[in-house]
Length: 473
Image (spheres, rainbow, N blue to C red):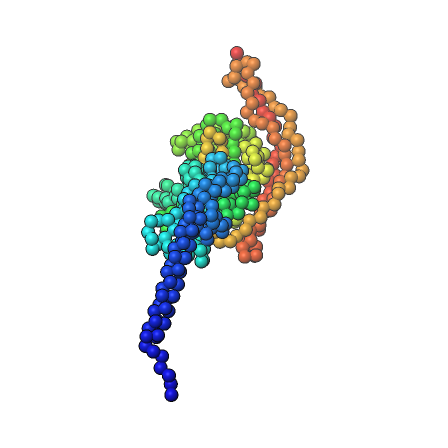
């Protein structure tokens, strides 16, 4: 038989258990409250535990402690030296100009504000997160962005090149205006700014790099023209093939005039594929009636004044351009003697005389595209350049160094009486030159095969200086 516990005793036991539980709960609450009060008291005006900056713990530290910590890390920034470079253009950003520093005051404010926003729920959550999992902040790096902007803008002035659209005007069988298209470039300022900023932040993360100087290559973007050379014309002309140059320092005024005039007549000529270009045909009549002036020419074994003196400067320069382009030379004649104009910055033998109808310069356009001849004459610097434009086909040009042999000294100076000159006046009309034989070889290959091979021989006669001696009373 089971003995029953009296109801009075059971109720009393329950009351005791309740009182004990209530007391325990109140004690726990009191303990929690005490702990929270102690926690807040302990971290009054200090950073809560679990808060780090760049993985460095600042638990129990004050905002001033953080400011002082970062202040000590700012000194190495004074040695900072960043060079911005594009090709030969450079600019340097020094540490003093950049004024890079850790903003410890702001970092202190950020760290101290965790758990102290005034929002009870949010603050409690962040305190709990900091204590249990930690909260890591990133240090604040400040710098003079204005000097970076100014430096990059100044660099852009010297770097940026606007693209050039092609120009091609064709009138009456001749190109009257021509300019090749040209790609431009522009400094990517935003990318450059971001690149500098990224490097500064990188240094802030790793102070060991601060002692070293650094060069950053600036990002530059290509800018294409709206109208390309090829699209501006229907002749397949896309690019520069080659050029020929000559100088004519010492030329008299009339000779300079004739060089400019003759070059202008050749300028703009188009040579169709498989056609032979004739210099004399393109030049036309050379006389006073067509604008040419008297200048010294070789005629009858003498250097005399004649209409068109200087035309051979033009044919010589075009001959060099045709050689450098790799075109077959159909017809070319050397001068009777070495002319000083044609050996200014050039070895002997690279000349071509013309005198219609006996002597002409001819070469063939053996490319599948048109070739455009462009002349550039500079009367101030006394230079002439011929440029040939077309479409490259992969040909390679080899020109050997001229071989000079059988040199013969010039005859003695010759003095001739001239009744048109006053007595006592001496006028030189011819200049001495050594006679010599010159030869050079010319080879053109394409895809490894020889497509043209020629030798050019010049037999320059010795030439005496001639002086006119006045006899007129």
